[in-house]
Image 1 (cartoon, rainbow, N blue to C red):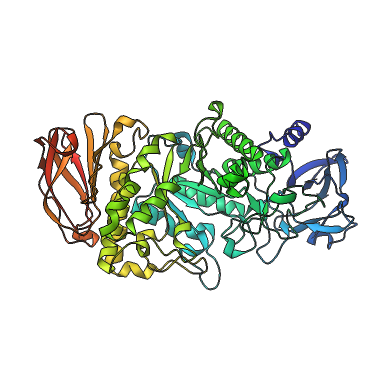
Image 2: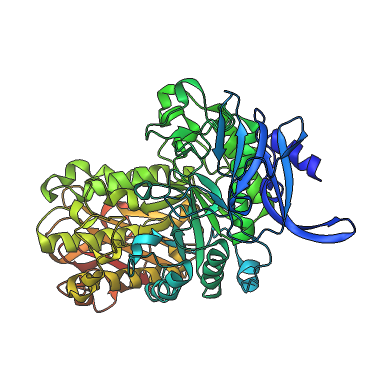
Length: 614
C-alpha cells in the first residue's frame, strides 16, 4: 500500500498523501510487545543526515535520526511514548550543504505565531453526528445557495485579548446564520499562516489547522455543529502560492522542491508560487484539499486566484500555464471521484472558457465560478450619477449574454470592502438616504439575478467603515434602525430566494429567464421574468434613478394577476412605503413587443418582486 501511494504521489495522482507522510500516532510490535508512539515520514529528495528534533528529545539532533527508506527521497523513523501537542521540526543537511530546521509540510497542527514549530496531534476517532446531512448533501445545482463569507477572527473580534475558539464562534454563529436565512458559511483560509494581514492567503502549513482558533478536533466540532443545524460550510483554500518564511516550504531541501524557479518563482504578492507542473506538488495540494473534505467534512472548496493558475501571474499575455490547467483538471476529477457531492468553486477573474465544464469535455471541472465580471459591472453601474446611467445601460444587461457559458456565483466578497475601495454602501451614488435606497435595490438585484449568492460578513450591516481584520465587525450598527433594517431585508431576500423555485431551479435553462424591459435606457428601468413551469412565474422590476412613478407600465409575457411579494421601499426596510398592496392585473398589449402589461407603482430607486397568482 505504501509503495502504491508513494508512486501515485510522485506521478501527481495521489489524493491521500496525508495518510502516509507527516507524523502519525501508531501502535507497533517491538520485542513481542505493543508500543505506542509516532511514525514520522518526510519527503525531501536532496536532504541528507535527517533527524527529528523536538521537546521530547531536548532538540538533540543526534537523538532520533531518520532512515532513508526509498531512493525517491523518503525518510522515516519511529519514536515511542510521544503525546499530543509536543513541538517538533526536521533537521537535515540540504542540497546547498547547509543544515536547516524545517516545519513538517504534512503537520496536522502548529504552534501559534510567532512560534514556527509543528505540533503532534492525533486526528483520528472524532465522533461525528452529521450522518443525515452527509447522506442528503448535493452540489446544489437546483438548490438555493446563499453564502455568508467570513473571517473567523474578526467576526466577533477578540475577547480579553484572545481569539474565540472554533466552538465558541459556533455558539453565536449558528443562531445568526439561521436567523438571517443563509444556506452556507464560507470561511477564509484556516490553514496555518504567520502574518495576520495575509488573511490566510499566504500559508505555511497546508494541512495544519489554524491554531489561532483551536485544534483540529475543535474545527471538526465546528463543522459538525453547523451540519446538525442544517448549514453547509465551504473552505477557502489558496493553492497558488505560499509564504516565504525560511522554516516552511521555501527551498525546502535546498532546491525549488515546491516552487517555480526562474521568472515565475515570485508572485505579484511577494510570495512564492507553487510549481503546479511538478507532479509531487500536484499531489501535495490535491491531498491537502482532499484532507479537509475527508477529515473535516467540508461541503465545498473555494479555490483562490484560479486566473493565476491558468495564466502565469494571472496575465493572459504570458500565455496559458499548461501545468496549472492540468492541475485544475486533476484536482476536480480526484475530489469529485472521492466525494461526489462536494462543491468545487473557482475564484477566477479570467475569460478562460470551460471553467465549469466537465473534464471529459476539456473543461477544468469546477462546479461554480465566481462571476467577477458581473460584480465589477454592477458596482460600477450603481456608483454612477443617475443622469449618466443611460449611457452605461449595457452594464446591467451584459451579464445575461454570457451567463449560460459557466455555472456562476454572484459575489460581493471581502475583496470589495478593503484597501481603500470603500464598503458596498460607500461605493453607491448620492447622499445618505439615496445610498441606503440604492443598497436595498442592489441586494434585491443580486438575489433576483440567476446565479448562486455570496456576501461578505458585514454587508448586511451597511457599514461605512472598511473591514479590518484586527477588530470586530461594528455590531453596534444594529442599534440604528436604518442599518438594522438592511439586515432584516437581507434575511427576507434569503427566505424568498430559498422558498421560490423560480429563483433557483434550472437556472441554466435559457427558457427560465426572459427580459421584459431591457432597452429602456432613458428611464433606466429594468424588468425580467423568471419561471419554473407554468405555475411558478415571477417578475422583477428595478428603478435605477430617484424618479418616482405612481403608474408605470411593465411588459409581461403572460396573462393573469401578479402579487407583489417584496418591495425594497417598505418602511420595515428603511423605505418610504411606496409599494403595491393589491394584486396587479395583466392587460393586453405592452411595450417591447410583449403581449401583456401591468401598471405598477415604482418608488425612487425601488426594486419589486411580483409572483403570478396560480
